[in-house]
Image (tube, rainbow, N blue to C red; front, top):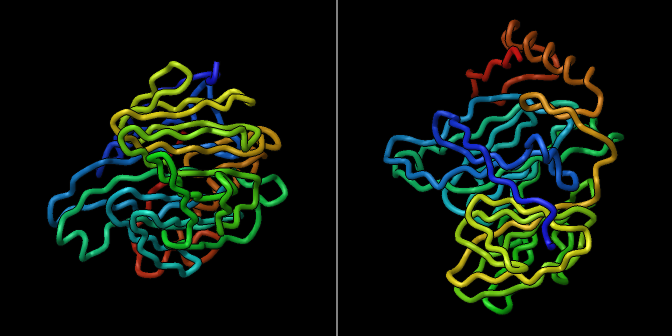
Amino acid sequence: MAFTQIIRPDARDLGDMVVQRAIPQPNLRSVGPFVFWDQFGPVEFPPGEGMDVRPHPHIGLETVTFLFDGEIMHRDNTGAVRAIRPGDVNWMTAGRGIVHSERTGDETRAAGHRLHGIQSWVALPKELEKTAPRFVHHPGDSLPKVEADGVKATVIAGEAYGAQSPVEAVAPIVYVALEFSAGGRIGCPAMAEERALYVAEGEVEASGQTLRQGDLAVLDSDAEPELTSSKGARVMLFGGAKLDGPRRVFWNYVASDPADIQDAKRDWDEAAANGFKSGRFTLPEGETEFIPAPKS
């Protein structure tokens, strides 16, 4: 069998939209260093409405945002302010602590728009969990693309299909967006220790099985199935080296040591109490709102 398991995501209502969360699940905590996987949208925002994810903290991870449609304005407390558009990559390293917001920009909000994309979290290696926070934007035209047999492969991170992404990931990783035209086909080489496929749109067939929108299929370590799509599809191929130990995930915090999560919880509460005037968690410039931490 090509797949060790196939996961159906949970629907989570975030207020502005419903997301499909495939990782973490009780029987799937990670694929390589990926410890979180959300598909948001597609959702149609009428003029005057949009996404408003208020400032919130992260530790111990890297967030990776990739859009199929729409635009998101990113702001964080390193001073980064950047709009991400389809095909671009926003790669944010939280390290010891970062605060960011994700909102619809003013012009896009006024016009109305369709929003659709993937946000994933990559756990940092243990020795880098407390590295300095940073943010790097990669425009879509900087990412290599390989086209053959009705499939366009965009190499977001790592090396795949003979192309190397310029994205500097600190852990061994592979992340590829596959866009199938009707009748498209492509192989899935054993390019990483752990791999999975996520169907963002449409359907694909592999090893006699049909994978539908929302399916996350974990590949056997040495499986190399051919993927085909009769009507067209969007599929994300991702994974990497196995994590260097288990990770705890609480809210927006990822850590190998539970004490680091307790410290982050305390520091966020203290920052909120003092108006974000000091400490490692401060608000991005121009932001006054924030998301309170959950109690459990």
